[in-house]
Amino acid sequence: MKVLLVARFVNRMGAFSMPFLASLLVHDHGASARVAGLVVGAFGLATIPSRLIGGLLATRVGTKPAVLIGLAGTAAAQLLVAAAPGLAVALVGAVLLGLCFEIYEPASQGLVADVTAEESLPRAYGLLGATLAAAGLLAGLLAAAVGRVGLSWLFAADAISAVACLVLVAAWLPATPPSGAGDGPNPMSSPWRDTGLWLLMTTGTTFAAVYMLIPMAMPLALVAADRPASDAGLLQALAALVIIAAQPLLRHSANITGRIVAGYGLLAVGLAVAGLHMTMAGYVAATIIIALGDVLLLGYSYTLVAAIAPEGSKATYFAIYGITWGVALTVGPPAMGQLLDNGFGTFWLACSAVMLATGIAQVVINRVIRVGKLERA
Image 1 (tube, one colour):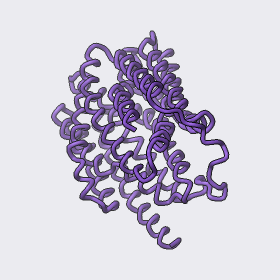
Image 2 (tube, rainbow, N blue to C red; image 1 turned 135 degrees about the vertical axis):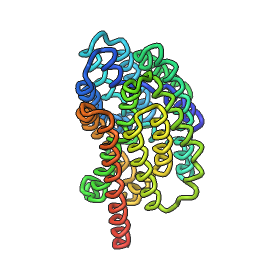
Image 3 (cartoon, rainbow, N blue to C red; image 1 turned 120 degrees about the vertical axis):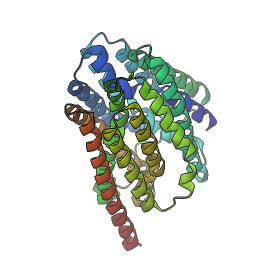
């Protein structure tokens, strides 16, 4: 487990390039915001089969080989984006990156289970989250430094971190046997037929779309505010620092409904602040408020997914729920390009409204799920 945490720390510390993909396309390849959004959307579309490929590889060849394949492909695609001489090659690199990007996630989550006793899994996943937050702090600082040299160097540095993580996993983690194709849940309890899961995936997709657009739009917004795009790395580091410092909030907020209301409310307020104060000071304030909301929402969606998943089907439910991020990456960036044509103020305020509506819907869904559990009991 310790080796896996170190490997994830190394990989996350270098994983600062994706928020700058749209900015790279605009400033290095002359793309419009709309075209950049479409390219990033193509990346997002490719991540949907990527997650399914990751699950298939983990089943057929084992979780460790799946992790290694995902990391190797990610590194190669990032180098292609970094070295792209034009927009067409950058598009190919973005699609290849999407196809490899999510292979690592379900497989690495499986590795946590493979190397950890069942009774220690909650603590292990909590420790993994804290490790990624700490790595995110350093990632933001590195992005600010490397980005000043050139945005393409961010992707080269990210590729290096993926290779370093690959070496750690290959050398130190034990091999894991494939789980076999016949170990899935009973078809009669298929998660695709679960209305509760579909409801959670709907709000999960709108949340993920806005959540991922924030770091993508921020470098462009900073340039519009006469700041270097690399300052987005400093804001990312600030957000990670707030998340780490505010972790005690989670120990005093066991009420899931209260966390949803407060978390989504803070996210909506933070985005509104960004739309009303489009300066570096405004973006700093917005980053702090959004990070506080992020702390309250950490892990809540997985708690709800676990609550509706039948015994023995939790892994399948989590894998399917994770597709929401790929869908969000597909539809979100093109929508970002459209909104940015009307100005950053319109963009941030629209994101605030969507996040507020998502929070309201999530409270209702949470109540429906709770009532449904009581009826089944």
